[in-house]
Amino acid sequence: MRAWEDFLLLQEKEIGTSTVDKWLRSLKVLCFDACNLYLEAKDSFQVTWFEEHIRHKVKTSLVNNNGKLIRVHITSVDKTTSFYKEKQMQQEKTAYFTMQYGNVNPEMTFANFLVTPENDLPFRILQEFTKPAEDSSGFPFNPIYLFGPEGSGKTHLMQAAVSALRESGGKILYVVSDLFTEHLVSAIRSGEVQRFRSFYRNVDALFIEDIEVFSGKGATQEEFFHTFNSLQMEGKLIVISSAYAPADLKAMEERLISRFEWGVAVPIHPLTKEGLRSFLKRQAEQLSIRIEDTALDFLIRALSSNVKTLIHALTLLSKRVAYKKLAQQLLYEDDIQSLLHDILEAAESVRLTPSGIVRAVAKYYGVSPESILGRSQSREHVLPRQVAMYLCRQKLSLSYVRIGDVFSRDHSTVISSIRAISQKVEEGGHDIGIATQDLMKYLTSAYKSLEFFPEEEIPC
Image 1 (cartoon, one colour):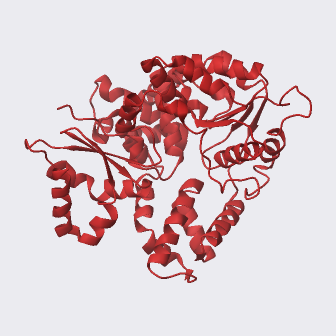
Image 2 (image 1 turned 30 degrees about the vertical axis):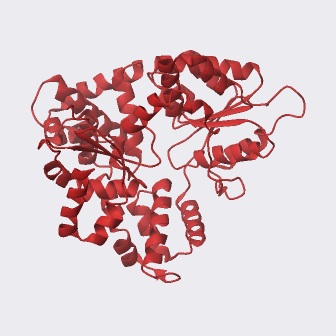
Image 3 (image 1 turned 90 degrees about the horizontal axis):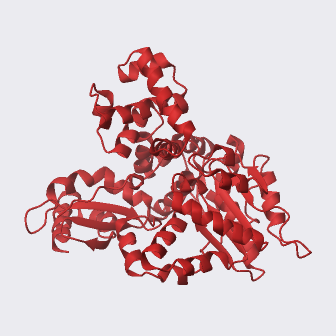
């Protein structure tokens, strides 16, 4: 694509050939439709680097043959919700139903799971009860519903159980919830609904992650209800994970919630500080890097104890240590700050503060932070403002007076705004409830790539 190549040549003059080769030429061009360019990065860190260093440049310098600006959409290779993937899904109508039954990370096993008092119960339950009962009555607890915050180990336990069951030769299907929805949409569009149902129901066990994604999606909930019933009646195992307990799911049908509670709902709690440090030390050893204790504590604080982000950071650190030939050298805090400066800066930019919440809400609703903090009374700005106030109360436990100071509103306005959003959230079935749930999940992490909020397309 000529326009992109010309842009890269321009960047070589500004930031150097080696930097362009490492961060930009390694991006995969997925699709180009004259006004929209779709790129795929190898991981979220490359996405973040692009957003931090290049996004402002493409907004002014990347143009097509007609002189129109080209909008760049970027996602990492592990995401499946980009526009290009959607287009590909439509073109390959039945491809999903010939897919493998969900790949798992071979490193995520019961043997290398760090068992602590916070996760001992779900560990024992999944390890014991993912084995079929001795008689023909099926599984003693069905479904198994695992819930806890991001980074608590749900995915590791789910994938460990999948691997354990597959060793016995079973047909085990492992998917994330948004993929279930994508499969359903594809099946409806292509007239392959029966094939979809056969794919999901003719299995020995179904493992499905992040069930809260179904919130507010009536057709998806309806189809999953019947899939659940079919598997349950056949005595097939169902294992579900979520950030929320069944009773706390918003915009979810009661009949589904009741079924989630049929078996056993097991909470899994985040690691303690000591448990997290032990886990990360083991990860560092496996990656052949040595980190001094206070430096490791600094990294944990800087990334707000988010396990997934810390693992990604250690993986990146190991690569940079190898590149700089620092293997076996003990790394101190200064070394961490130097080697991971981009990751630490990204984490700081989304640290959980009132301004961070305002930025996240603004991005979600497609408005500016200034409009949320301003005096506009249009619904386009009032609703995001109320949601931001609600999140400041929920996530930061700020007083009404303090929230009023942040948003330049009086005490009574803050109270009425938060009550309005709270009521919508409690009622369920509202876009507002789904939005706040999405934002709450997003704000739980100190570091997220900007692909959570995809770019809007530019119509040509």
